[in-house]
Length: 465
Image 1: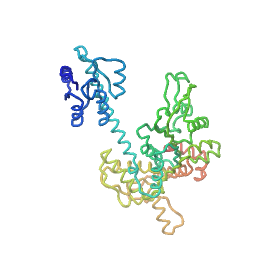
Image 2 (image 1 turned 60 degrees about the horizontal axis):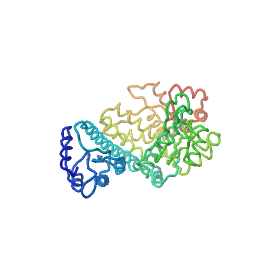
Image 3 (image 1 turned 180 degrees about the horizontal axis):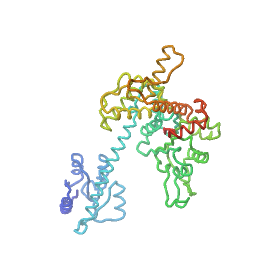
Image 4 (image 1 turned 135 degrees about the horizontal axis):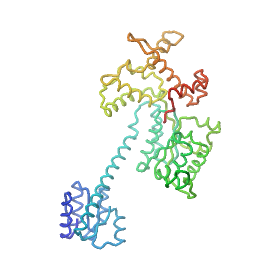
Protein backbone atom coordinates (compact mmCIF):
# COMPACT_ATOMS: atom_id res chain seq x y z
CA UNK A 1 0.00 0.00 0.00
CA UNK A 2 1.08 3.58 -0.58
CA UNK A 3 -0.72 6.90 -0.19
CA UNK A 4 0.63 8.15 -3.52
CA UNK A 5 -1.53 6.86 -6.37
CA UNK A 6 1.33 7.04 -8.90
CA UNK A 7 3.64 4.78 -6.92
CA UNK A 8 0.83 2.38 -5.99
CA UNK A 9 -0.05 1.86 -9.64
CA UNK A 10 3.59 1.51 -10.69
CA UNK A 11 4.22 -1.15 -8.03
CA UNK A 12 0.97 -2.90 -8.91
CA UNK A 13 2.04 -3.23 -12.57
CA UNK A 14 5.46 -4.57 -11.56
CA UNK A 15 4.00 -7.25 -9.26
CA UNK A 16 1.28 -8.31 -11.69
CA UNK A 17 3.92 -8.58 -14.44
CA UNK A 18 5.87 -11.16 -12.37
CA UNK A 19 2.76 -13.22 -11.58
CA UNK A 20 1.34 -11.89 -8.29
CA UNK A 21 -2.22 -10.94 -7.41
CA UNK A 22 -2.38 -7.47 -5.86
CA UNK A 23 -4.77 -5.78 -3.41
CA UNK A 24 -4.28 -2.03 -2.81
CA UNK A 25 -5.06 0.24 0.14
CA UNK A 26 -4.80 4.03 0.55
CA UNK A 27 -4.01 4.08 4.29
CA UNK A 28 -3.26 1.90 7.32
CA UNK A 29 -6.91 1.46 8.31
CA UNK A 30 -7.82 0.12 4.89
CA UNK A 31 -4.70 -2.09 4.89
CA UNK A 32 -5.60 -3.66 8.24
CA UNK A 33 -9.10 -4.37 6.92
CA UNK A 34 -7.65 -6.24 3.94
CA UNK A 35 -5.17 -8.21 6.09
CA UNK A 36 -7.91 -9.32 8.49
CA UNK A 37 -10.32 -10.41 5.73
CA UNK A 38 -8.09 -11.83 2.94
CA UNK A 39 -5.27 -14.40 2.77
CA UNK A 40 -2.19 -12.22 2.19
CA UNK A 41 1.38 -13.45 1.55
CA UNK A 42 3.18 -10.09 1.73
CA UNK A 43 2.58 -6.45 2.67
CA UNK A 44 4.44 -3.55 1.03
CA UNK A 45 3.83 -0.19 2.73
CA UNK A 46 5.23 3.31 2.60
CA UNK A 47 6.82 4.77 5.72
CA UNK A 48 5.16 8.16 5.35
CA UNK A 49 1.36 7.98 5.24
CA UNK A 50 -1.49 10.04 6.62
CA UNK A 51 -2.46 8.94 10.11
CA UNK A 52 -0.54 5.82 11.22
CA UNK A 53 2.87 5.58 9.55
CA UNK A 54 4.26 2.46 7.88
CA UNK A 55 6.39 1.32 10.84
CA UNK A 56 3.44 1.42 13.22
CA UNK A 57 1.37 -0.46 10.63
CA UNK A 58 4.01 -3.22 10.52
CA UNK A 59 3.79 -3.54 14.31
CA UNK A 60 0.00 -3.74 14.24
CA UNK A 61 0.05 -6.37 11.47
CA UNK A 62 2.45 -8.57 13.43
CA UNK A 63 0.17 -8.44 16.47
CA UNK A 64 -2.48 -10.33 14.49
CA UNK A 65 -0.33 -12.05 11.83
CA UNK A 66 3.15 -12.59 13.34
CA UNK A 67 4.42 -14.57 10.33
CA UNK A 68 3.26 -12.15 7.62
CA UNK A 69 6.34 -10.54 5.98
CA UNK A 70 6.31 -6.77 5.37
CA UNK A 71 8.53 -4.69 3.11
CA UNK A 72 8.78 -0.98 3.95
CA UNK A 73 8.98 1.55 1.07
CA UNK A 74 10.81 4.83 1.52
CA UNK A 75 11.61 7.76 -0.73
CA UNK A 76 14.68 8.77 1.24
CA UNK A 77 16.62 5.82 2.64
CA UNK A 78 19.04 6.48 5.49
CA UNK A 79 20.84 4.13 7.85
CA UNK A 80 18.56 5.27 10.69
CA UNK A 81 15.42 4.62 8.65
CA UNK A 82 16.63 1.17 7.64
CA UNK A 83 17.51 0.13 11.17
CA UNK A 84 14.21 1.44 12.51
CA UNK A 85 12.29 -0.50 9.84
CA UNK A 86 14.03 -3.77 10.70
CA UNK A 87 13.50 -3.19 14.42
CA UNK A 88 9.80 -2.69 13.74
CA UNK A 89 9.75 -6.20 12.24
CA UNK A 90 10.00 -5.42 8.52
CA UNK A 91 11.56 -8.11 6.34
CA UNK A 92 13.46 -5.43 4.36
CA UNK A 93 13.06 -1.98 2.87
CA UNK A 94 12.66 -0.77 -0.72
CA UNK A 95 13.64 2.61 -2.13
CA UNK A 96 11.66 4.74 -4.56
CA UNK A 97 11.55 5.29 -7.47
CA UNK A 98 10.72 1.92 -9.09
CA UNK A 99 12.91 2.24 -12.18
CA UNK A 100 12.97 -0.28 -15.03
CA UNK A 101 16.51 -1.47 -14.28
CA UNK A 102 15.49 -2.35 -10.71
CA UNK A 103 12.68 -4.70 -11.66
CA UNK A 104 14.78 -7.84 -11.07
CA UNK A 105 15.83 -6.56 -7.65
CA UNK A 106 12.21 -5.91 -6.68
CA UNK A 107 11.09 -9.33 -7.98
CA UNK A 108 13.81 -11.19 -6.05
CA UNK A 109 13.11 -9.25 -2.86
CA UNK A 110 9.38 -9.96 -3.07
CA UNK A 111 9.98 -13.68 -3.77
CA UNK A 112 12.43 -13.95 -0.85
CA UNK A 113 10.01 -12.25 1.53
CA UNK A 114 7.12 -14.54 0.54
CA UNK A 115 9.32 -17.64 0.89
CA UNK A 116 10.52 -16.42 4.29
CA UNK A 117 6.92 -16.05 5.46
CA UNK A 118 6.00 -19.49 4.15
CA UNK A 119 8.89 -21.12 6.04
CA UNK A 120 7.91 -19.36 9.27
CA UNK A 121 4.35 -20.68 8.94
CA UNK A 122 5.63 -24.22 8.25
CA UNK A 123 8.05 -24.10 11.20
CA UNK A 124 5.32 -22.88 13.51
CA UNK A 125 3.00 -25.68 12.35
CA UNK A 126 5.76 -28.28 12.79
CA UNK A 127 6.53 -27.05 16.27
CA UNK A 128 2.83 -27.17 17.12
CA UNK A 129 2.72 -30.80 15.92
CA UNK A 130 5.75 -31.67 18.08
CA UNK A 131 4.15 -30.09 21.12
CA UNK A 132 0.91 -31.97 20.45
CA UNK A 133 2.78 -35.22 19.95
CA UNK A 134 4.45 -35.00 23.33
CA UNK A 135 1.50 -33.77 25.39
CA UNK A 136 0.68 -36.06 28.30
CA UNK A 137 -2.52 -37.38 26.75
CA UNK A 138 -0.54 -38.77 23.82
CA UNK A 139 1.55 -41.05 26.04
CA UNK A 140 -0.28 -44.35 25.81
CA UNK A 141 -1.21 -46.06 29.06
CA UNK A 142 -3.65 -46.08 31.97
CA UNK A 143 -1.73 -48.18 34.52
CA UNK A 144 -1.10 -46.78 37.97
CA UNK A 145 2.67 -47.09 37.44
CA UNK A 146 2.55 -44.84 34.36
CA UNK A 147 0.06 -42.39 35.85
CA UNK A 148 2.34 -41.86 38.85
CA UNK A 149 5.17 -40.96 36.49
CA UNK A 150 3.02 -38.58 34.45
CA UNK A 151 1.84 -36.90 37.64
CA UNK A 152 5.44 -36.14 38.57
CA UNK A 153 6.24 -34.98 35.03
CA UNK A 154 3.31 -32.57 35.11
CA UNK A 155 4.48 -31.08 38.42
CA UNK A 156 8.12 -30.57 37.44
CA UNK A 157 7.85 -29.84 33.70
CA UNK A 158 7.73 -26.07 33.96
CA UNK A 159 10.75 -25.68 36.20
CA UNK A 160 14.41 -25.27 35.39
CA UNK A 161 15.55 -27.96 37.84
CA UNK A 162 17.73 -30.80 36.56
CA UNK A 163 15.93 -34.13 36.08
CA UNK A 164 17.42 -37.63 36.17
CA UNK A 165 15.30 -40.30 34.45
CA UNK A 166 16.17 -43.90 35.33
CA UNK A 167 14.79 -47.18 34.08
CA UNK A 168 15.46 -50.18 31.90
CA UNK A 169 16.18 -49.88 28.18
CA UNK A 170 13.11 -49.46 26.03
CA UNK A 171 10.84 -48.00 28.72
CA UNK A 172 10.50 -44.61 27.01
CA UNK A 173 12.91 -42.39 28.94
CA UNK A 174 13.41 -40.09 25.95
CA UNK A 175 9.63 -39.78 25.56
CA UNK A 176 9.43 -38.61 29.18
CA UNK A 177 12.24 -36.13 28.52
CA UNK A 178 10.39 -34.70 25.53
CA UNK A 179 7.18 -34.44 27.55
CA UNK A 180 9.11 -32.43 30.14
CA UNK A 181 10.50 -30.08 27.47
CA UNK A 182 7.36 -29.56 25.40
CA UNK A 183 5.22 -28.87 28.48
CA UNK A 184 7.62 -26.24 29.83
CA UNK A 185 8.17 -22.55 29.15
CA UNK A 186 11.17 -23.62 27.02
CA UNK A 187 8.95 -25.42 24.50
CA UNK A 188 9.51 -22.76 21.83
CA UNK A 189 13.28 -23.29 21.95
CA UNK A 190 15.35 -26.33 20.94
CA UNK A 191 15.62 -29.65 22.70
CA UNK A 192 19.01 -31.12 21.86
CA UNK A 193 19.65 -34.84 22.43
CA UNK A 194 23.08 -36.39 23.01
CA UNK A 195 23.62 -40.16 23.43
CA UNK A 196 26.70 -40.24 25.65
CA UNK A 197 27.15 -43.97 25.07
CA UNK A 198 27.10 -43.77 21.27
CA UNK A 199 29.85 -41.16 20.79
CA UNK A 200 33.53 -42.07 21.36
CA UNK A 201 35.06 -40.43 24.42
CA UNK A 202 37.60 -38.46 22.36
CA UNK A 203 34.78 -36.87 20.32
CA UNK A 204 32.16 -36.38 23.02
CA UNK A 205 33.79 -33.29 24.58
CA UNK A 206 33.81 -31.50 21.23
CA UNK A 207 30.24 -32.67 20.59
CA UNK A 208 29.06 -31.22 23.90
CA UNK A 209 31.10 -28.02 24.13
CA UNK A 210 32.22 -27.36 20.55
CA UNK A 211 35.75 -26.53 19.39
CA UNK A 212 37.72 -23.75 17.75
CA UNK A 213 39.64 -24.02 14.50
CA UNK A 214 42.95 -25.84 14.99
CA UNK A 215 42.01 -27.28 18.39
CA UNK A 216 42.98 -30.77 17.18
CA UNK A 217 43.69 -32.66 13.98
CA UNK A 218 40.87 -32.21 11.44
CA UNK A 219 39.44 -29.24 13.37
CA UNK A 220 39.49 -27.12 10.22
CA UNK A 221 36.56 -24.90 11.27
CA UNK A 222 34.95 -23.52 14.38
CA UNK A 223 32.09 -25.74 15.57
CA UNK A 224 29.32 -24.94 18.01
CA UNK A 225 28.63 -27.63 20.62
CA UNK A 226 25.34 -29.10 21.73
CA UNK A 227 25.18 -27.01 24.90
CA UNK A 228 25.44 -23.80 22.85
CA UNK A 229 22.75 -25.07 20.45
CA UNK A 230 20.45 -25.76 23.39
CA UNK A 231 20.85 -22.25 24.83
CA UNK A 232 17.43 -21.11 26.00
CA UNK A 233 16.07 -24.65 25.66
CA UNK A 234 16.79 -28.15 26.96
CA UNK A 235 19.67 -30.60 26.55
CA UNK A 236 18.93 -34.31 27.03
CA UNK A 237 21.97 -36.37 28.01
CA UNK A 238 21.06 -40.00 27.35
CA UNK A 239 23.12 -42.89 28.76
CA UNK A 240 24.83 -40.52 31.20
CA UNK A 241 26.37 -43.49 33.04
CA UNK A 242 28.70 -44.08 30.07
CA UNK A 243 30.34 -40.65 30.34
CA UNK A 244 34.09 -40.70 31.13
CA UNK A 245 35.37 -39.35 34.49
CA UNK A 246 37.15 -36.49 32.70
CA UNK A 247 33.94 -35.27 31.07
CA UNK A 248 32.00 -35.81 34.28
CA UNK A 249 34.14 -33.09 35.88
CA UNK A 250 33.36 -30.66 33.05
CA UNK A 251 29.66 -31.48 33.13
CA UNK A 252 29.64 -30.84 36.87
CA UNK A 253 30.93 -27.32 36.22
CA UNK A 254 28.19 -26.69 33.64
CA UNK A 255 25.56 -27.79 36.13
CA UNK A 256 27.03 -25.58 38.86
CA UNK A 257 27.86 -22.45 36.87
CA UNK A 258 26.17 -22.87 33.46
CA UNK A 259 29.50 -22.05 31.79
CA UNK A 260 32.04 -24.00 29.73
CA UNK A 261 34.99 -23.52 27.36
CA UNK A 262 34.99 -24.94 23.82
CA UNK A 263 37.86 -27.35 23.09
CA UNK A 264 41.01 -25.34 22.32
CA UNK A 265 39.55 -22.07 23.57
CA UNK A 266 40.15 -20.04 26.74
CA UNK A 267 36.91 -18.08 26.24
CA UNK A 268 34.17 -18.90 28.73
CA UNK A 269 30.71 -19.38 27.24
CA UNK A 270 27.62 -18.87 29.42
CA UNK A 271 24.40 -20.75 28.59
CA UNK A 272 20.84 -20.79 29.86
CA UNK A 273 19.92 -24.42 29.47
CA UNK A 274 17.91 -27.03 31.34
CA UNK A 275 19.61 -30.40 31.74
CA UNK A 276 17.70 -33.69 31.64
CA UNK A 277 19.78 -36.87 31.98
CA UNK A 278 18.83 -40.53 31.63
CA UNK A 279 20.43 -43.89 32.29
CA UNK A 280 19.55 -47.58 32.38
CA UNK A 281 22.40 -48.24 34.83
CA UNK A 282 22.45 -48.09 38.63
CA UNK A 283 24.54 -44.98 39.22
CA UNK A 284 24.90 -45.83 42.91
CA UNK A 285 26.75 -49.02 41.93
CA UNK A 286 28.94 -47.08 39.50
CA UNK A 287 29.78 -44.67 42.34
CA UNK A 288 30.90 -47.60 44.52
CA UNK A 289 33.03 -48.85 41.60
CA UNK A 290 34.61 -45.36 41.28
CA UNK A 291 33.21 -45.05 37.74
CA UNK A 292 30.80 -42.20 38.43
CA UNK A 293 31.30 -39.07 40.52
CA UNK A 294 29.13 -38.86 43.61
CA UNK A 295 28.95 -35.05 43.47
CA UNK A 296 27.77 -35.20 39.85
CA UNK A 297 25.13 -37.76 40.79
CA UNK A 298 23.64 -35.44 43.41
CA UNK A 299 23.70 -32.54 40.92
CA UNK A 300 21.81 -34.63 38.37
CA UNK A 301 19.41 -36.28 40.80
CA UNK A 302 17.58 -33.10 41.84
CA UNK A 303 14.27 -34.37 40.45
CA UNK A 304 14.41 -38.17 39.98
CA UNK A 305 11.87 -39.91 37.75
CA UNK A 306 11.84 -43.71 37.35
CA UNK A 307 10.40 -45.02 34.09
CA UNK A 308 8.56 -48.28 34.91
CA UNK A 309 9.26 -51.50 32.99
CA UNK A 310 6.47 -52.90 30.83
CA UNK A 311 6.08 -55.97 33.06
CA UNK A 312 4.83 -53.57 35.76
CA UNK A 313 2.36 -52.02 33.29
CA UNK A 314 0.35 -55.09 32.22
CA UNK A 315 -2.82 -52.99 31.94
CA UNK A 316 -1.11 -50.88 29.25
CA UNK A 317 -0.13 -53.76 26.97
CA UNK A 318 -3.51 -54.08 25.14
CA UNK A 319 -3.65 -50.28 24.68
CA UNK A 320 -0.11 -50.21 23.30
CA UNK A 321 -0.76 -53.12 20.94
CA UNK A 322 -3.82 -51.45 19.42
CA UNK A 323 -1.90 -48.16 19.27
CA UNK A 324 0.95 -49.76 17.31
CA UNK A 325 -1.53 -51.55 15.03
CA UNK A 326 -3.18 -48.20 14.24
CA UNK A 327 0.22 -46.64 13.50
CA UNK A 328 1.20 -49.55 11.24
CA UNK A 329 -2.07 -49.34 9.31
CA UNK A 330 -1.71 -45.58 8.81
CA UNK A 331 2.00 -45.27 8.09
CA UNK A 332 2.59 -48.50 6.16
CA UNK A 333 -0.83 -48.84 4.52
CA UNK A 334 -1.46 -52.17 6.23
CA UNK A 335 -4.87 -53.76 6.79
CA UNK A 336 -4.72 -55.46 10.18
CA UNK A 337 -8.13 -55.47 11.87
CA UNK A 338 -7.08 -56.39 15.39
CA UNK A 339 -5.72 -59.22 17.52
CA UNK A 340 -7.24 -62.49 18.72
CA UNK A 341 -7.96 -63.21 22.39
CA UNK A 342 -5.38 -66.04 22.39
CA UNK A 343 -2.63 -63.81 20.97
CA UNK A 344 -3.45 -60.99 23.39
CA UNK A 345 -3.26 -63.38 26.35
CA UNK A 346 0.17 -64.61 25.27
CA UNK A 347 1.46 -61.03 24.90
CA UNK A 348 0.06 -59.79 28.22
CA UNK A 349 1.76 -62.61 30.14
CA UNK A 350 5.16 -62.18 28.44
CA UNK A 351 7.94 -60.58 30.53
CA UNK A 352 9.07 -58.11 27.83
CA UNK A 353 12.78 -57.76 28.70
CA UNK A 354 13.05 -55.16 25.94
CA UNK A 355 10.00 -53.30 27.25
CA UNK A 356 7.87 -51.02 25.01
CA UNK A 357 10.45 -50.95 22.22
CA UNK A 358 10.43 -54.75 22.02
CA UNK A 359 6.61 -54.72 21.93
CA UNK A 360 6.56 -52.14 19.14
CA UNK A 361 9.09 -54.05 17.05
CA UNK A 362 7.24 -57.34 17.58
CA UNK A 363 3.88 -55.84 16.50
CA UNK A 364 5.49 -54.35 13.39
CA UNK A 365 7.09 -57.68 12.45
CA UNK A 366 3.88 -59.67 12.95
CA UNK A 367 1.82 -57.13 10.98
CA UNK A 368 4.21 -57.33 8.02
CA UNK A 369 4.02 -61.14 7.98
CA UNK A 370 0.24 -61.31 8.59
CA UNK A 371 -0.64 -58.57 6.00
CA UNK A 372 -4.43 -58.63 6.57
CA UNK A 373 -7.06 -59.78 9.07
CA UNK A 374 -6.45 -60.38 12.78
CA UNK A 375 -3.14 -61.21 14.48
CA UNK A 376 -3.44 -64.79 15.74
CA UNK A 377 -1.54 -66.73 18.37
CA UNK A 378 0.18 -68.77 15.67
CA UNK A 379 1.64 -65.54 14.22
CA UNK A 380 3.70 -64.88 17.34
CA UNK A 381 7.39 -65.90 17.65
CA UNK A 382 8.19 -69.17 19.50
CA UNK A 383 9.21 -67.59 22.81
CA UNK A 384 5.63 -66.45 23.46
CA UNK A 385 4.36 -70.04 23.16
CA UNK A 386 7.26 -71.37 25.27
CA UNK A 387 6.28 -69.30 28.30
CA UNK A 388 2.62 -70.31 27.96
CA UNK A 389 3.44 -74.02 27.83
CA UNK A 390 5.59 -73.74 30.94
CA UNK A 391 2.85 -71.87 32.78
CA UNK A 392 0.24 -74.49 31.83
CA UNK A 393 2.36 -77.40 33.05
CA UNK A 394 3.14 -75.61 36.30
CA UNK A 395 -0.58 -75.03 36.92
CA UNK A 396 -1.19 -78.77 36.38
CA UNK A 397 1.12 -79.55 39.31
CA UNK A 398 4.06 -80.74 37.23
CA UNK A 399 7.23 -79.81 39.16
CA UNK A 400 9.42 -79.48 36.08
CA UNK A 401 8.37 -76.53 33.90
CA UNK A 402 8.98 -77.16 30.20
CA UNK A 403 9.97 -74.29 27.91
CA UNK A 404 9.25 -76.28 24.75
CA UNK A 405 6.59 -74.96 22.34
CA UNK A 406 3.74 -77.15 21.17
CA UNK A 407 4.68 -78.97 17.95
CA UNK A 408 1.97 -78.59 15.33
CA UNK A 409 1.18 -81.16 12.63
CA UNK A 410 3.33 -79.12 10.23
CA UNK A 411 6.36 -79.47 12.50
CA UNK A 412 8.74 -76.74 13.72
CA UNK A 413 12.29 -75.59 13.06
CA UNK A 414 14.25 -76.98 16.01
CA UNK A 415 17.26 -74.72 15.44
CA UNK A 416 15.12 -71.58 15.13
CA UNK A 417 13.22 -72.34 18.34
CA UNK A 418 16.40 -73.04 20.31
CA UNK A 419 18.10 -69.96 18.86
CA UNK A 420 15.18 -67.69 19.75
CA UNK A 421 14.93 -69.13 23.25
CA UNK A 422 18.68 -68.72 23.81
CA UNK A 423 18.54 -65.10 22.65
CA UNK A 424 15.57 -64.38 24.89
CA UNK A 425 17.27 -65.86 27.96
CA UNK A 426 20.51 -63.95 27.32
CA UNK A 427 18.61 -60.67 26.84
CA UNK A 428 16.61 -61.26 30.02
CA UNK A 429 19.79 -61.80 32.03
CA UNK A 430 21.51 -58.78 30.50
CA UNK A 431 18.51 -56.50 31.02
CA UNK A 432 18.05 -57.63 34.64
CA UNK A 433 21.72 -56.90 35.38
CA UNK A 434 21.76 -53.69 33.31
CA UNK A 435 24.25 -55.31 30.93
CA UNK A 436 26.71 -56.31 33.64
CA UNK A 437 28.10 -59.31 31.76
CA UNK A 438 29.73 -60.92 34.82
CA UNK A 439 26.45 -60.96 36.73
CA UNK A 440 24.48 -62.02 33.65
CA UNK A 441 26.83 -64.98 33.13
CA UNK A 442 26.30 -66.00 36.76
CA UNK A 443 22.51 -65.86 36.33
CA UNK A 444 22.75 -68.07 33.24
CA UNK A 445 25.30 -70.47 34.72
CA UNK A 446 27.75 -69.72 31.89
CA UNK A 447 31.39 -68.78 31.77
CA UNK A 448 31.83 -65.09 31.01
CA UNK A 449 33.81 -65.85 27.85
CA UNK A 450 31.03 -68.15 26.61
CA UNK A 451 28.46 -65.42 27.17
CA UNK A 452 30.62 -62.86 25.39
CA UNK A 453 30.98 -65.17 22.38
CA UNK A 454 27.20 -65.66 22.19
CA UNK A 455 26.55 -61.90 22.47
CA UNK A 456 29.02 -61.22 19.68
CA UNK A 457 27.68 -64.03 17.46
CA UNK A 458 24.07 -62.85 17.85
CA UNK A 459 25.01 -59.17 17.43
CA UNK A 460 23.30 -58.20 20.69
CA UNK A 461 23.82 -54.71 22.11
CA UNK A 462 22.12 -52.49 24.67
CA UNK A 463 19.00 -50.78 23.41
CA UNK A 464 19.13 -46.99 23.68
CA UNK A 465 16.51 -45.46 25.98
